[in-house]
Length: 458
Image (cartoon, rainbow, N blue to C red; front, side, top):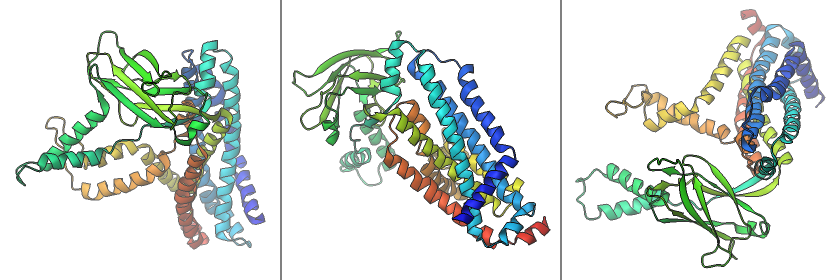
């Protein structure tokens, strides 16, 4: 342990020697203090949060991420190039301890900088919140600066229903007489429409099972978060709907009329204790418009409830960001274990750029080709490279999903709860699994590397 702590201290000294700590501290404080002053919010609780949480945390994460890559590449590669590592390696300390000590040094430095930045953001958030109107302060305290859980309706079995209806559709047809793939696609579209589209003057019902949560959600208000799309645009830009919430044929059932804009997320409070004795909350929507409305299966409607306060949720969000930074430290050190400082920086930055390009990679995988679709013919182009690149892109997406499935910034800015289960899963997937694989690769290559030979060749 003393050997590891010695390497951690040397890593901290290197950060101070490179002036990284002070430059990074100035940039972080500027992003926390100056950015909210330069960007004015719209006076609403959500606009206020968008400026102070989303933008500042995104800038802080970007700055710390780039600094982590630069320091992790430099602290190992530069030590080898400047013959400092040769002096450390001959001492009674294993190579894996040197590598792990540098990783711990970078991660602890990130933790300190992230904690200081997070404390400044939280303090500025509380101070600026006092300037909001009283009504917006109420929204801020109850809908944004909270940790809220989410409940959705059990998703329908789209693929199972599609196959069942497809068999019924094809049972009287001659094999080979129809294009089964085309029919399946049309049937799947019909199944989606049945579960998502609300025709004019029709009703759509959601039944959400609260489970054991019904015992601690008694006498507590709930919130509906809805988003829909309209088949046609009207002159007013809003669409009326009757919401009936509560057990059917019960005196507790509540009715409310809402006029909402399409393609926009809306959130409104509903009274407490509207679920039945089994904990099932029934929500009916009557479309009072001459056009059909579409509620997507995943994002059409969800019920939000308060799980805890903002402070602990904010701390869990910062720790999840630290998991990302720990992975970047492993990436930089793994590259620096075998490459020179400029090359290691370029390679690690390229890997990070690939991570930001996941949308493009996902589009190529869905299309099955890197050339995309021809806008004139509507057909997907083909390339000989598809044989190699498409399977590679699929593997890359599986790896990227392990990291990108955790979004603490979005959760914090919308008042979503970051649960201990999500945090534990982030540690397991990002730090232990991906970071551990990079650490094993880096330690093995660093242990087998001839330091003196590498220095002589350079």
